[in-house]
Amino acid sequence: MTGEIDRLDTARRQLGLSFQDLWVRYIGVGGRCDAFALRGYLTGRSVLADVDHDHIVLALNEALGDACADPSIAYRLS
Amino acid sequence: MPDRAEETAAGTVAWWYTRLTDDENLQAALRRVAEAGCQLLSNCQAASVTVIEQGRPVTVVSTADIALAVDAAQYKVDDGPCLSAARLQRIILIDDVAADDRWPMFRDAAIDEGVRASLSIPLKLGSAAQGGLNLYGDQPGAFADDDQDLAVGFAAQASIVIANAQAYWAAFDSTKNLTAALDSRAVIEQAKGVLIARHGLSDDEAFTQLRRRSQDANRKLRAIAAEIVEQARQDGR
Image (cartoon, rainbow over all chains, first blue to last red; front, side, top):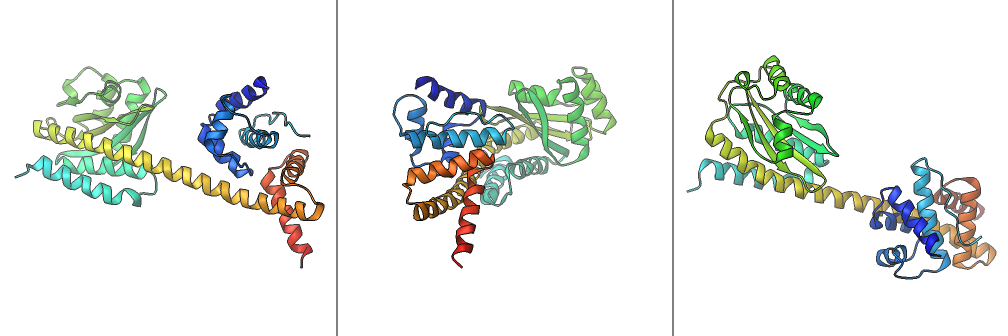
């Protein structure tokens, strides 16, 4: 679980996105949590539902695609 | 009674603030800094603003091509009065360019362009960048002592204006991105509504189905959602 979340935060940093930048992208794909909850999740201080996790993955994968990188972060829900 | 420097600087700053939101971007604010700086000094022939980000200098605005050429000669050897002023954050005055041997590349380019005096003033641009206002004159001794005082006061206030412009445009960009995100989100919510109504899915199931379609088609979620909404609209006619 921790490694999975670390992967998200590593991608965020690689993309040069602040927590706020990622939150705006996350809201744009339908994310429901506020910016504090997203930051807390990525820094291991709070828990989110699987579907919320997948919204973050989607926001990051779309950002990776925009940056011509491989959008390969795995989703939790199949 | 305020002296010339106080009067001019106060008037210029008031004018800047009223114009801040009229500028189309940060570069326009910097252009006004260069233009106002040059107008402030009676013997100023040309002015430019240098910004150094990640060690690389760029002239972001200039009032005349001669300033661009003289700046470029300094960037070529990564040394010169405007770069030193920006990096060391101190004022550098050259009264007579031909008699100053500290930066030969700058000296030669300046003489070629008819520049005989220069005054380089540091600008504070936050932690990520260094900057300088470069003022060039066509006569030796173009910038007198009171011009220096005027330019220093001007640069201090210009730095505040630039910081405000940076904050304003950062907030503007942030709002623009959020507006685009909310537009995208509205379409996705509509598409989820279509899937919920058609297939009796939960909200989370509708999202997962949309996300799967997006992944399979290697297209953005918003594009898939827009197609579903459009199809539903056509089906309803």
